[in-house]
Amino acid sequence: MHSQDHDRIFLSPPHLGRHELNYVHKAIEDNWVAPAGPNITGFEADICQHTGAVHCVALNSGTAAIHLGLILLGVGADDEVLCSSFTFVATANPIAYLGATPVFVDSEAQTWNMCPLRLREAIEDRIRRGKTPKALVLVHLYGMPAQLRELLAIADEYGIPVLEDAAEALGSRYGQQALGTFGAVGVFSFNGNKILTTSGGGALITNNADLAQKARFLATQAKDPAPHYQHSATGYNYRLSNILAGIGRGQMELLDDRVKKRREIYTWYQRHLADLPALRFAPQEPVGSRANRWLTTLLLDPAHTSVTPEQFRQHLETRDIEARPLWKPLHLQPLFQNAPHYGGSVCADLFERGLCLPSGSAMTEDDLRRVAGAVREVLGVV
Ligand SMILES: *Cc1c(COP(=O)(O)O)cnc(C)c1O
Image (tube, rainbow, N blue to C red; front, side, top):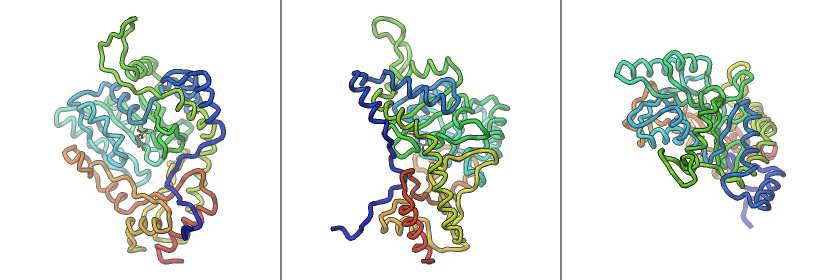
């Protein structure tokens, strides 16, 4: 037998409930195995109900949702699109698909999301150089609400439409309102590592009926209304399958539970590791908001430890625990080395010092203790 008497603790594995299979079963029984059917409409209705959005279009990935969302906002070749630098690459890749240029904006220290001061600086500078940015892609990283009041006011002042990348933020709120519903378009991901999953999937939400209709049209190969297949626009094959939407329906029943559990995990780590001055947990959300705490994130304070995030990660790996660095800022990625950026040192510093701890909603108290024990070992305070 292997010397370890425990299983690997993953960062954020899928966590299925008891009803997903019923929806999938029904889809197969009724032969709804195409990218159309009752699970899709049901899943979309569930998302609308939970978020308060008027329209939802279920898609086969969050990346596809961002791509279509940018098209809906009019982004095309040679446009510039403002984008958070501190995010996963999927936020910005669709900007490149369209032949547009991302303009990266740094984070602020409170939420780790886009800095309103840097946003204004970026917009004014791009205008001075001759181009008003065509759209703004705002990310709520790790489920933490960005400073929406300030950011939206600036975007509004310059007439720049907002796409909210809420891929990591399903179930988070700013005030009483769900993230994803503040911009002209909002995006969720149901990839395997997210707070809910359809194995792979995404959704676009909007309150604008024309935009929703256009998203459906583009997601299904842009078929003109004609009995033969006629096309006058470039379309995509981006719809979610009715089988996967069945998984989504079962998962949506669990959203409140999953958010509650992720938040408890964050609080548990904070409480049980509070005596370690080397650890700085991700800040509290803006007053009146609720972060879903998709992942518990923290920074190592170099004033209190010489352990680097990579040493920390590697030590947890020896205990069969998966930790991960924070996202590497996009303005530092070789892929985007020629893209303009405004600020950058705040998110670069977060990346240098930060880590994500295992945060899966199926974690047990024993799992949490194992992680906390490994953290104490690596910081030399066993
Ligand atoms: C996961 C993720 C995406 C992409 O979603 P997929 O469903 O994996 O295509 C986009 N943005 C952020 C911030 C993400 O974390």
